[in-house]
Amino acid sequence: MNNFEMKDEYDMSQAKRGAIVPPEPNQTRITIRIDTDILDLLRDKVNRVGGGNYQTIINRALREYIQYDQEVLEDTVVSSIY
Image 1 (cartoon, rainbow, N blue to C red):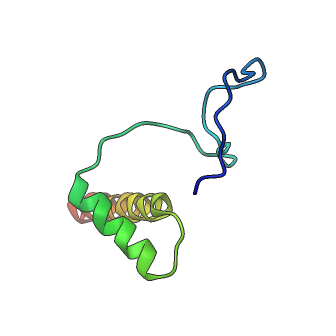
Image 2 (tube, one colour; image 1 turned 135 degrees about the vertical axis):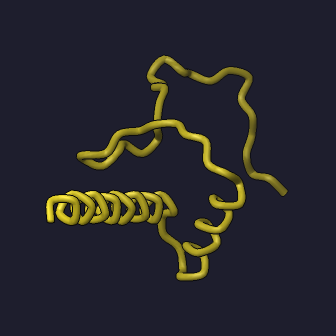
């Protein structure tokens, strides 16, 4: 049995559009498209460890890639000098 009762009219004068949870400092809200299988894998990984946020895993993966890419670039530059 549902205890929720629909009203004939709701007061939306104080309603606000946008995210329910404001972003953390230094974070920007964006919309991207991610392959479903990748997103499912990340969500499953988060659920297996007891919860959390798959977006944190995406940020970590991007940071690791950027670090890797920077190291490869530096190695390439250094090896071309010698």
